[in-house]
Length: 429
Image (cartoon, rainbow, N blue to C red):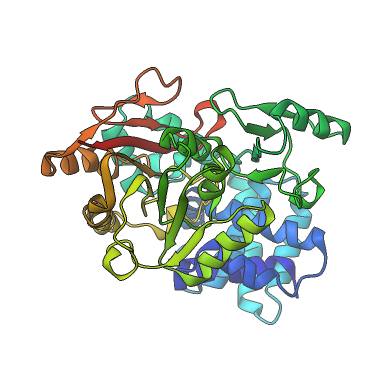
């Protein structure tokens, strides 16, 4: 089947069925044997999702009336994306995209007309798009407005970073080797990388590479993990003999990192509501030769899985809008709605209230999200602190990263090449 048509069907599943781009692609690529074809389909899908709002603006300017057939619309967007952002020759982009609509004569005629019209009117259309903020930044209006409100003077920079290809970040397993040793091993294989200054184990590859090609991946020398996420294990400040709870733990990157940093824990319990995601934690721990007690359970209902023994440390990587990882998951811009935020903040608060009794006196809870919205972050923690007399913030002063908020610290997307992330430490006294 034509690669562009496959990509159009993937994009349609995201737009019409609300599937995540990751899930839709995984399903579509199962039958594709050629690695080159797989890479091309993936590039088209990520690119169209990343620039959807700009492409949609331009497409609407080229159509006399809205196009109801989503697969054909996605196919035209794929054509526009190739012409604007890819190194595909214009005649090839047009002809191959037209050919993808095999069996639909009306669609082939429309695709050909729209793409050729774009080539004729390119400069004027792009100038029009630059004057419309939604099209210029290729984000939904609600995200643009919220970032302008939460981060005046910095919102545009976050929007820009969201549209950049994400770096491939690694975490060196310091229980097995030093970061410098691993950098040398990469260099010996002709792979160049840089250390992440704010993370003791972080590395960013100069060019992304398949994990199978990285030295020692199968042996647990390294894991793929963004630098911002790598901060969690250190901020949790675990000590030998402590009992640790990792809530909403899948896929297990932070779980493994905690165990790498402190192998002498009494116990680490990792909880996630999804049994399939629990299996992902198990697979990651097995590759890294680590063990934890894995529990499939609802964080809002710990009475169904907690043994009654308090924890010295709790990590809550809370469900959130994921607005800090849009550059990795551009379909967030298509799937997330402004009305979702209220439901997410309610869930976060429910989890916080449910697991707080599980923390021992003098214990530390680390609250984390991959969001850049204050409603989910410092406002959430302010509300929690005001409702719990025995909760007190342990400030993250002089951290060397992030923006100091009224409560906790916020990393804005792109800082030190990291994803957008929020952290707050709360002690029980």
